[in-house]
Image (spheres, rainbow, N blue to C red):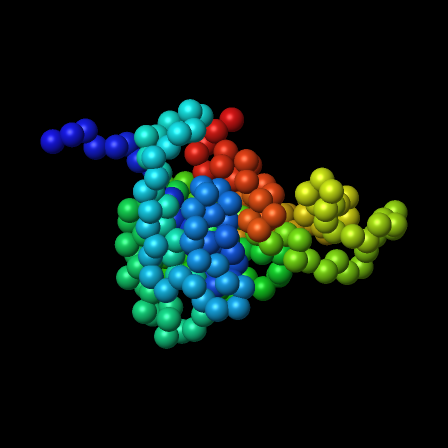
Length: 210
C-alpha cells in the first residue's frame, strides 16, 4: 500500500448567500457552482487537490463546501448531520459573514455547535462581500464617498474607516458581538471572493503562514 497523502481539511461554512463557493474558487481555482439568488450547495461538496505551494506544509488540501445556515428551520434540521460530520473531521473552519449587523444565523449556529468544535480546530471568520456596504453617518473629512477603488482593487479610505475604525468599524463591532457566542479562538479577515481581494491574508490565516 502506498503512503497516504498528508492533507489539511478545510470547511467553508456560514449563512446562505455569504459567498462560500465564490471564495473557494478564488482561493483554490476550483469551479464550484455559484448563484447570488438560488441556493447552490445542498450537500457537502468535497474535493482534494494536490498542493503545489511550497509555503503550505501539506501534500494535499481537502476543501469542503457546506450547505448554508439559516435558509429555513427545515433545512437547518436536514443539514445538521452534515455540520456535525464536518466539525468532527476538519482541521480548519472558515466561517463567512458580511458587513451587515444582522447575525442571528451566526449566533444560532455557534450557540448550538460550540461544544462540537474540536480544541485544535483552526477558526477563521471572514467578513466577505465588503464592497456590498452602504455607509451612513459619514464622518467629516471624506469628500470621496466611493467605497471601492476599482483601479487598485481595494477598499477606499472611506470603506477602510468603516472596517477598522475603533468607533465606526465593523471589525471592532464583530469582535464585541462574537464574544457573546463564539467561545473558541479565531482570526478575523476582511475579504471579497468575487474581486479576489484579501485572498493572500485569508490563506495565511487558514494555514498559519507568516
